Amino acid sequence: MPNHDQTTEIKSSADSVTDGSARPILYSFRRCPYAMRARIALLAADIDVELREVVLRDKPQSMIDASPKATVPVLILPDGTVIDESLEIMVWALAENDPHDWLDPESGTLDDMLALISQNDGPFKYHLDRYKYFNRYEDADPAEHRRDAEKILNRLDGRLAVGKYLFGSRPALADFAIAPFIRQFANTDLEAFDAMPFVHLQRWLNDFLKSSFFERAMIKYDQWHEGDTPIIFKAA
Image (tube, rainbow, N blue to C red):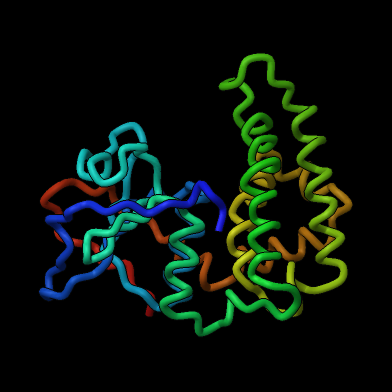
């Protein structure tokens, strides 16, 4: 696993739901690609969680207490363990239950997938942020960062020309870990993205957007407040 993925231990006082059973608690934000991929993996693993939808400008103190870095997603397990990195949440969930064999790709290995995801989470995300949110970065040239991001997209398109998915003819961890960020890039200027020559990448992204995992992960929920009736994000 990447070195930045870590788990910590805290004492949780709120890990039960209305039926009295203990479930993990997930602090999430619907549009965040990191939170998106965590929700998708929980769905794929058939793990129900208590969902706490966060508004980023009004973060709940309980989430900050659990994870002082105060970014989504944050998963609190019934034993008090906190996992506050999205990829770590994905791997944890699929290690618990992986009915679709997402950790065992048709081509390559888990380590191969993690290496590709690392490129997405590092260089691609760096350029994506400075393309999409260039006003937040001093002297960022969005056109330059878009071109650099497109070089990475070109390599993904080449992989997808060989197999329907990134690691073979069926989807695996890498597909669902990376696709939310490609969606974010595409939505920055959808007309320009559709005009790109990356036909395999466009087809792959379209398949992701039509998948039941994405559709279920993107259901809207109201902002969570302390004392609200628990919302159960159900896998089935």
